[in-house]
Image (cartoon, rainbow, N blue to C red):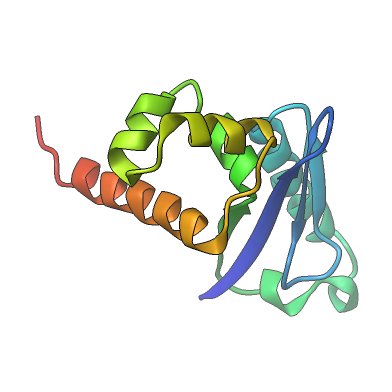
Length: 131
């Protein structure tokens, strides 16, 4: 199965996205959700093209993997995870989390990795929950 890496970035007034490893796939929206839908719509439109114009990655099974810049990711999950919650799962001070989420500061690679690992750990724990 082919993995299509979708990069989502925040601009001053919206979100933009593009496929990092497949040419011609772009999207935008006022929210991350609208941006993701725009990517899905773009893919469906591309699939209607003449077969010679459709990228090989879209002709077989594929999965979309979304990569965020830190600011976009933190803003996207702001309604779900508070800064204290992110501090708890990452060990990064919530004031610093706030600065990352507002774009006042850009996290170093090690800090981005801590955020990613904390969210992945939380995801694994949630997948193990049964009610």
